[in-house]
Each structure stands twice: as structure tokens, then as C-alpha cells.
Image 1 (cartoon, one colour):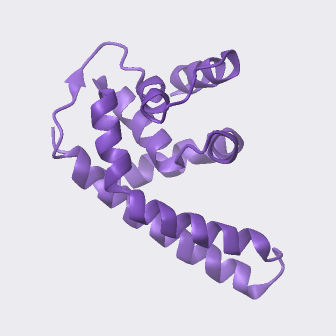
Image 2: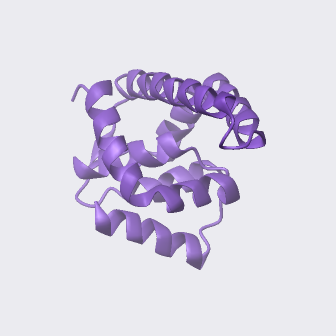
Length: 148
């Protein structure tokens, strides 16, 4: 299957809108990348599962981009929301997120993911990140999987 960046971007916007607070919590408290959370959900919809090795390849492929986005995010968060620079930084950060999604899709198209009835990609992403799946995280993954 050939994955498309525009389709993923559209899907991400819809899912993020519904799950923004949970995505940000996983980002801030578990250091998970929101775009990788979203691609996991995107792949779940087509019953496609990435192995932990595939996840590591995706993580490695966006390492530089991830650092750039984290720096932008820190700068933006340091500025008050009423400041004009905040809106500009938010637009720049969003543009970088979109570019990162293209990197993810490009790498994904190089992989050969498996087709599974219940792919559970978020679990494999967390394991690839070296996270222990505590009960709270397991419930959140289940919530994501059941809502999409």
C-alpha cells in the first residue's frame, strides 16, 4: 500500500481535534510524538501493524525534525498567548509538524508493515520508545483504539 501525506494530514486534524488533551498529555508526560501517535491510529484503521523495529525506523527518521519542533514548542510556550509572536510561532510549528508528517509517510512507504485484524500500533510505539505499559497508559491506548 502506498500511503499519502495529504490523507494522513486530514485524518490527523480530525483525530487531534477530538483527542487534543490526551495527545498533549502523552507528549508532555510520556515524551511521545503526537504525529507518531496519529500515524499509529491511521495505520490501525487499515489493519496495518508496525513492528517495534519499524517504529524505531520511524522514530529515527524524524529525530532531527522532532528536535526542531520541540525547540519551537518551547519558544512558543514561553510566550504569552496574547503576544503576536505566539501566533507566528504556532504557525511555524504547525508547518514543521506537517513537514514531519511527510517524513513519516516517506519512511512508512519504505517499510513493509504487516496486516493484522487488531494492529494495536500505539502499544508497539510505546514499547519501541522503551515505555513500560502501566495501567493508565494501557487504558489510554484502549480509549484511542476504541474511538477511531
